[in-house]
Length: 468
Image (cartoon, rainbow, N blue to C red):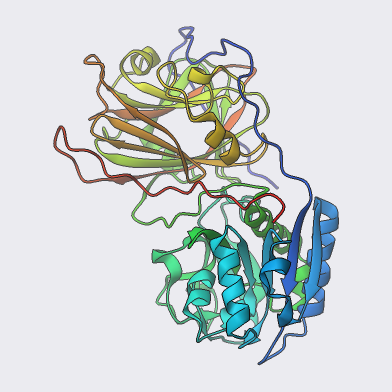
């Protein structure tokens, strides 16, 4: 039974007019491309998993249900430039040992560098140990494993399509849990990790990633999951959705921020306890669902703001989802106040509303600077799917990343406003709008002296080419 949502109530009742719709659609989100094709490669030169046929059948079922074509092979001769160019992604399904020769490796490297995508499943980490390019693409090599047993999986990214369906509690499942020779966290974006206290045989000192992604590995993208050893895995709805989400992201049908992420402190982690530092300003409220770890706007117009401290130079990340054509935003750089007009008049709003005019649409600094709409549209997921913002503030410079892609770069020159110090908040816009937020976290950045240019942050604008 789902726990009853707790309402975060308003503390004021003044009517507001914050970030409202004021024009027709300027740029519609790009729909998923049709006709994606993936190649499942399952050659083995070592241990052979009896789950391989079930895994292949599952990928074909997912493809038939979700609109992508699937070919399967164990012929390494398929790794030629001409053949690989047919595919949006290549799925390495429990491959083991050395499965490609030097020429075939070279063809696959060129495919990835040209914007291709890799999906690794389970023993894909137990292959090609003497090929450094592959090791970096996969993210980590297999070291050992204990017996098949239940374990608790901790979801670290609730916006990626491979994990967005999983709630805030642990994902309890049975599999063969790999230990890896190195921790991929420094170079890959970790989606889920194992709780080593929940089973026996973990050897990664309590930091045990088990699924991860990389948005730009030498020009391509990669997703890896350590699950999938057992035949039973492929009958689990949650694991099937996990695998499907990884494939959809790899082929470019769904977007997510897969840049490596370390050093962030949660401001809202999906629990009621984490709301102790937040206050409602203005009418309306937010509904808390602790099972999903979400805050959802209710009525308005108001704002929920973090009052524990002002932020200076920082990277703010949060996940958000629209129900349909909805309106909300994130305010930054405003002084302490229970009046949301203070945020409007003294701070800046990063807009959420994909159908407003350019200066007031998703990714814009509301009323001041439009997002790069072409990049925005390529990076934006459809209503009903999760997106991730990074709002990066250094001095008076504000950059906005949507699902890992930089879509806005704005510098404040208004002497009445300043980004150098201020609070942050999320908007509840009105009765007709329903926007949910998850996983709000922040990382302090080194302060810069005035006049010093901010270094360009990492960004990824690449997407697999249509028709690959």
